[in-house]
Length: 389
Ligand SMILES: [Zn+2]
Ligand SMILES: [Zn+2]
Image 1 (tube, helix red, strand yellow):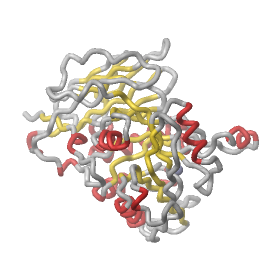
Image 2: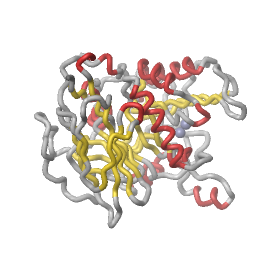
Image 3: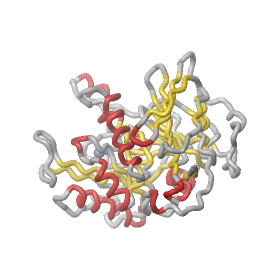
Image 4: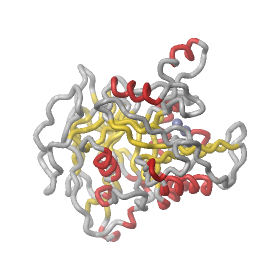
């Protein structure tokens, strides 16, 4: 017999890019119950605590904050909207925080009232050459974001950051992870399937180097996927499961990667793709300040979404996971609970699904889907067997 629940995220330091692998977790695992709260806007009050509350529940006063972790402004070479207008767009769409992630530049401007600016950057290397070589027709794209960077540590002072070139794929990414570390930020591996930039082995290796988040939804690039956005999401999710199944913990992000705002309609008129905003986001259970958001995300107290909103995600020390969906009209919701190997553990209809593990699932995570097609992905609860202790 084994059963021990490890919400490994609760152990992760808020201080930076330490390795998140399960093997580093100490035996004494604090029980965790991230969430039990509500989004700030247009949501009913949080319901009462679930039937099996954590012995140490987090403060009930914390609400979910809506955040965007990947967006570009005119300070990227492939976008034209001033950063102030980008931030105003997200404020007007009910966001609480936005990370501006311009290509190779840390952009800092005064955000509009009510919105937090999370300093960030998307370190970007596009090359025709790398090892292993890309498949015919594809390029070597190494895009890795730093979130919560310290502009004071930016030796480029807001101008272009120089990234040392390495032909090896892993080395190319590692040079970016190192820059994020020097900036005091937290590393995100972006759109791993775009040009097949990173496989599970690469993600695992980078997680050991400090990458904490994997972008499993990139609304802009997913929309261009030959088999459609949903297929792109499914493939990214399968990659995430492959990484988690090896015992390596990374948390999943959903983002816009928006590049076009007022110029979007004109692009569409001319037959071009428009990378628009407010399609994919994260909901973080934190106080509304940057330090709290950073700590909550490093602890896994958030979920990724393309539109489904949850006001509770509870994981308690017997391994039970309980959610509550903020219903939107007459839509129906189906939740899949997923374990090691991407195995579907259970499929539950309704707005308050829960799952009690048997002990051999490896981990438990949930994907909630509304009848309109939007989804939400909770972060995994890692389970450990007795032999692992
Ligand atoms: Zn990118
Ligand atoms: Zn981008």
